[in-house]
Image (cartoon, rainbow, N blue to C red):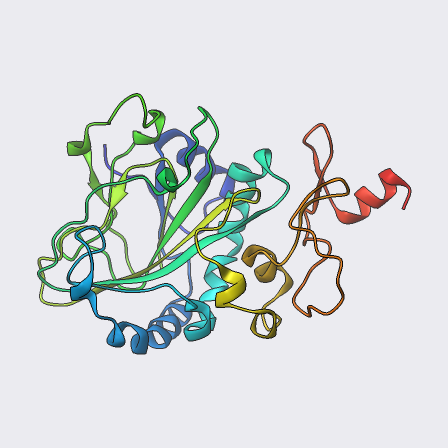
Length: 294
């Protein structure tokens, strides 16, 4: 079945509904092209310095990548990781299972001409747990160039998220290419099988991918070393929370707490919604203080 493709004015609830049902969905023209062009220019030096010929078959011998400290090189990309649509969908998919979620990883990818297709895979396979009905993360692939079936558009197997990886391997021949114009976003679940396509044209194809994972999981990238407090303080509170500069939970049910006062990037209270009670209901920090009488 073809991937569902929606206009940017669509309600986030509609995107979430299709994402849950099909495992992936495209939202066309979601980001401003001026921002996309700025991010592309900021990434250019990193792409040009990459030595892709030293990589494995999975990462590609003709695929340029930059991930470590990406936001140092491309600070404008921070406006993609906390795009309102990304936040709304992450709220719907992840917040029922955590107090806060965080940025798992962020990678710029440029597939060069004559690159072969990447093996299909699931992003959540890096975590050694699997619980039916529990999504550990979501992914967002931003198209920095037009994505076509010929130039290496991400390939997705619709509905492949429905099978536990320990039970069943879906029919990978049912893959579909995420064809979309620059500025569009492909949303997919961490349990959905996907992979980069082969580039059979004579021009590169660039994209930027970021994942959001449950706040009680270890992040794929160590953002605290890549973006130490002296740099992270320059980002907005919501962006710093996504990087992990905030605790998960509160009181005795808190992970990653820090009681010091010498970290300018630290957020002792996450941006709203910031708190979840024992019934799983999300509220604001003010709600939490009112309930505990603080």
